[in-house]
Length: 536
Image (cartoon, rainbow, N blue to C red):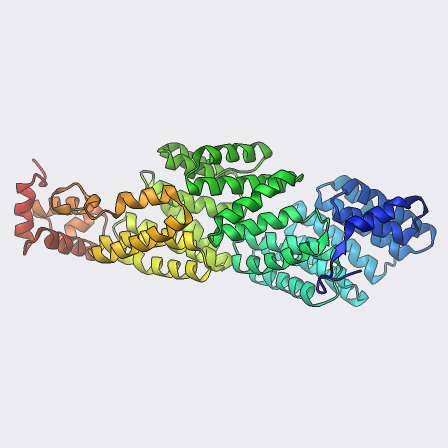
């Protein structure tokens, strides 16, 4: 059997055709290989039948270990396809064959099947214990395939149990073993996909990028491969979108929608296309994609909410995100929803809701400790500071967020962060720095073709567009000058507007500079002359 580390090309089409042609005369080992070839080609029913026949043939020949191996793969693959009834039946068969004194190999196989089933039904802590025991037995039996699968199961369980550091260490060991040792192709495919999915579920895009490249190479070496091609392409498109290769990502996802049969993979591909359409301003195409993804069972938020926002339907956007968050989404979707909620609620919604969402995003970032999540949390917290007139607090967060996006080679997110840096610079009275940030963001967004974001940028980037008030004062500065004109001190203004004295002092300094007056008396006179003073 070729190994993943060797990456030798395997023509599964030719092998399947050759074995199928003489099926009636096949022995146990050839039936086992036929099951594998059918599995690689996506012929699931043929694969189950061939492995079932191989299982019986091994038993008839007295090869109980090989029969147990077939039972394991039937249990494992049926469980992966959520066919829990038949998977349970094969696990019972495996345990019966192992008897009262199972070998290390059969014991490891039984424990691993139980660990996977337990995990699927929410028994995360029990899955950790079962997977650990399976690893030890598989290692003592010298069965590298079982050891890798059990380590993968342990890693996923540890991540789900709230110990991502230990979990990802397990998953890294799995990938290293696949790359360097004699792991069979039968194990490499499920391991690649499960590990990459776990990485992307927690937005560990650095790991996902490395393993997606390796998975693509492995897929290319398997002629006729079906089970992982679609999932591989969706993972790859996620990475392509992040690094700004939107056209290639769209082509990749479109190819998946034309050939994929598995609904979960298909719904993710269609939703991904919707996101790319939305980012490019193709509203009709985005709407159609979201509706198709929703019909397949995919959560369509926050994509649909952001599309509604772009169409001026802010209330619908906010309610859509709130509804999706109530459903207890997985960490990956929850991250996207919380980031969107911060943005949407600060734009005419409920600031308290935005603050809670930003805090929840920070908790996720602290739990999983990935650069992507840290950058998201920094940006969300900075948005809250900007909305509460604290640009001095927002600025370092935005600089840290932008540096992380740049390290991740994520041009779109970096550009959006630079727009916020421009807003913070403007609020601090540095219009020149603001325009430099806006210009840098404009260049990237233009290259990407991010039409809606470009339109939003142009509305705020014009120097004179920041305020209609006399003297170019911002909304908050108008509130401050009105209180100055009423004779309030900085402390009194801070108490009334729920700001710090330091922030009020900065606003006063900016007001004096904008109006070209020397003191509070001059600002008071300006307020009365231009109708900004409070009326009795």
